[in-house]
Length: 382
Ligand SMILES: Cc1cc2nc3c(=O)[nH]c(=O)nc-3n(C[C@H](O)[C@H](O)[C@H](O)COP(=O)(O)O)c2cc1C
Image 1 (cartoon, rainbow, N blue to C red):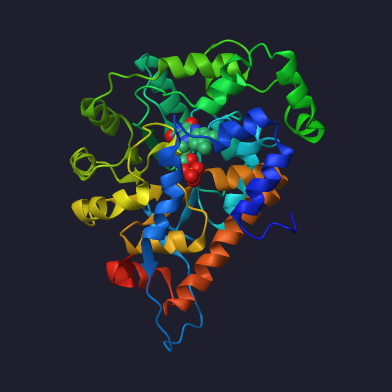
Image 2 (tube, rainbow, N blue to C red; image 1 turned 180 degrees about the vertical axis):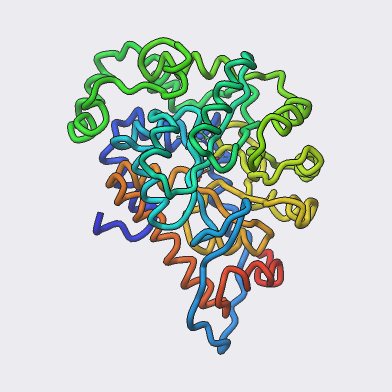
């Protein structure tokens, strides 16, 4: 990993370490992958303002969001199947997050169950991501499990009413991995260190789905859990969840100011401006273009987090200037995990933090607080 000088280097190393079928699962988006690509390329539609001679010694990257202080304006977002990228992936990523002083959100499709993650990382801020299932009693069980594990916030993901074709996965036969073909076996066995790492203890399982009796093995369980995601969900269900969950509630998957205002009315503590990393509505706006109007619409009414395509420290600075409280990352830390386990996740965070630090200094700013206070005046549309 000593040759990894930026997130793209971690991606390339992950590509060498992961079987193609899992690399593509992480890397890919839906349909033409237009929105996935726009998430990354639309940062270039903005520019940062450079100010000089302003004493930028003694910089401070710390900030607060979702009711607590954190070392960086950053968190690890929920990633299903993270444990397929590296040994005990959810536990390792949370440990790296804790060392860096940032929170980690555990996916409903995590391989390792959330109580194991919190038990092994008692000092780390852990959030839990939820899909409301058609079976509300089972949904209650998942909420209770998050509560018992000590999750500090519940992230309700709302942009997955259906799952569109992720064409790389279709081509690779990802969903048919319950019974791997010879070609799929050959693909997995061509990565012996991954095999030793990830399937050493037998075929992984989806923590939540195993407990719910959703069959055996990661793919069958994930399929059964995914079929349970309720496409009939409405704001009334958010009201129900608000009454049910006493902790911080975050709605993940907002792209329109009108929906952001509804989230405020529903009593949410935060939203994530997100298009699911370009894995859901292909043709939807990039998140960096959607962010300014949403931040303006909700004012200081709640924490506005944003994710999608963040690969550089300056991308984070831009989002903070446009009104975000913090940025959530997905693929960058999955690549880090695949590239080097816990140390790889730590590397991904450190690279972004280092770049953010020099970006602030060169913008003539001493702290994240100063950047947030400067807001839109710190950047301009190109
Ligand atoms: C491999 C993978 C799995 C994901 N699984 C989930 C999930 O289970 N729940 C969820 O809310 N979001 C999920 N997401 C979306 C991420 O939380 C996040 O919105 C997205 O990855 C951000 O974009 P980025 O990967 O470009 O940073 C997943 C994303 C990826 C790449």
